[in-house]
Image (tube, rainbow, N blue to C red; front, top):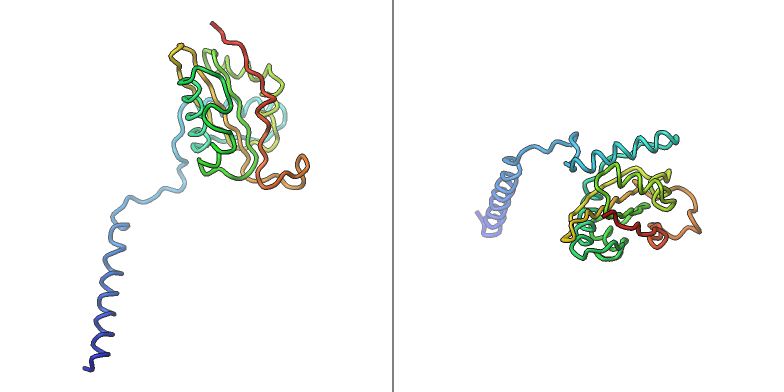
Length: 194
C-alpha cells in the first residue's frame, strides 16, 4: 500500500470511529415528548383559565400558558418584592427583559399589582383599571404567564405577562417595527390593601 493510500485509509477509519462514538450519547438520552407542553405553575394555569373566560365572554380568542412568559413574570414579581415597590423597571426595562428571555418578537404587555390577596382579587383589580383591562383584552393576546412573590413587607407582588405568537398583520400604531410594546407608563399603580 502506498503511503498516501495508507494515510487516506487511516483518516477514513478515524473519521468512522468519531461518527460512531459521537451519536452514542444522544441515543441513551430519554426521548423528547413533543406533544406535552413545558410545565407551568398552578398560578399560571389558573390565570389562563380566568383570562380565557374573560376573553371568551367578549368574543376574543383563547389564551394558553407559556413557561417563558411565566419566567419573565416570576423574575419581575421577585424583583418588585425584593425592592418592595411596584415598578415596570425594577427588574429592567420590559423590552430588555423579554429579549433576555428569548422573546424578542411579536406584541407583548405586562400587568403588575401588589397588595392583592389572591388571583380573583388581582384580576378584579386589573379589570377595574382601563389600562390593565385593555392589555388583557387585546385581540392579539395568545399566551400568558403569571407569577407572584411575597415581599419583606408581607405584601404579594403580582406580574402578568401577555404576548402574541407573532407580529400582527398590517400597520400597527404607525408600524413601529418588528416588536411592539405597550407603554407601561399608562398603567397606574393601585394603592395597597392593608
